[in-house]
Length: 262
Image 1 (tube, rainbow, N blue to C red):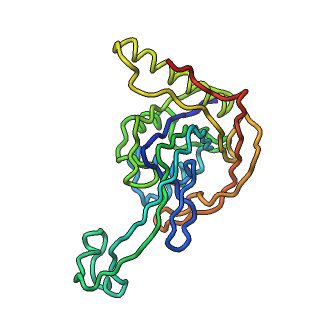
Image 2 (image 1 turned 90 degrees about the vertical axis):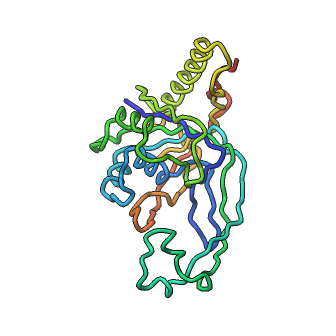
Image 3 (image 1 turned 135 degrees about the vertical axis):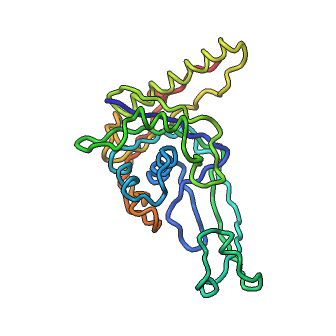
């Protein structure tokens, strides 16, 4: 079975949890909707192309391996906004239009936004059984190498810290694909060091602590915990998300993938 595996590393990332009032939390692992958005950006899909995003959602099972949850950063955020009444009859398709009202009409909203600092994960896609995937995994890998739109990890301020290094891997399960990926990654580091005659350009991948996967993934590991996560994309245009069942397998030290360091 083919898998597409890639890495997500960044100084800042934010994986949206259900927003309550002024608080915008983050999970420690990428959400399904974030992965679909990332793939859509790489392919150059219009963000309001509902059918194309639904095809990505329904065409693949997603598994995530947590390398590091990083540390929590909480941002006290303020933003100027006009009241809805002041926008009537005015174009406000952009932020510039929205702020074009007289300054005395602008108000301030407050919110608290969470980020993960120096978090890292691996993502594996499996084409779903009985469903025609909209793109070959090789085409998705090429799009992630040369994305049409800018990629970010949850928020526009969260740029990747390293190439996603997508790899198409033949493996019997997501767990086996993650193992192969870490071996390939370490081999590429060593080759680069030999060819360049200096320290490898990337740090080794950290130990995989746990993996999360949905019902459509052959994980290769038994689930230790099952949770309900509200990150299933319903309508991108309306920011509508539904519930999804996610299974979590904790990786004991006897199974841990820890690439050899120099």
